[in-house]
Image (cartoon, rainbow, N blue to C red; front, side):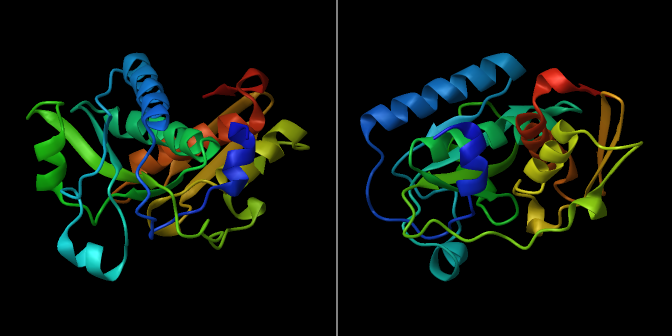
Length: 222
């Protein structure tokens, strides 16, 4: 499965099998995480066979079998939320290519539990966790906005722009609000996101998806 194929296959999954992650899968995830950390100066970390980051209420009412997660952490800088969102999008799709399922959790995780298991340091910023494992199901598509509701192009939109918008609409966002707006002219593209608790992280996630769909060689961000 390619990353592009993973975009269509990936859906939020909240219930997981008790099957542990194989050592080889853990190794591949950690290699991908290390690459993202080195490229963007982050401190994302995989934690396995541990439930500290999930509060009991969520564990009882919304999820099942959750025992593995990636802590989304990095230096407390102005752009860290967007970088963590962008990198988490890559990691979620990569996990999908390995036959895993994921769930991006921003508001309902245990900050104390995540901090306890993070090696990023007390001054690092943690914006959430990505649950990862073998889902009991593959999830279902979320309700999506129409392309014309979120995007506009000056003139006739080229195929790469349309493909990028379609890819962005597949991205997971906080509460599935899809609060982004994409504008294009020539080979220049801009993306903004409506203000909210996770707007910068959502912007990073959606930018990653747009790039993957459109092809980074076809446009430039402005």
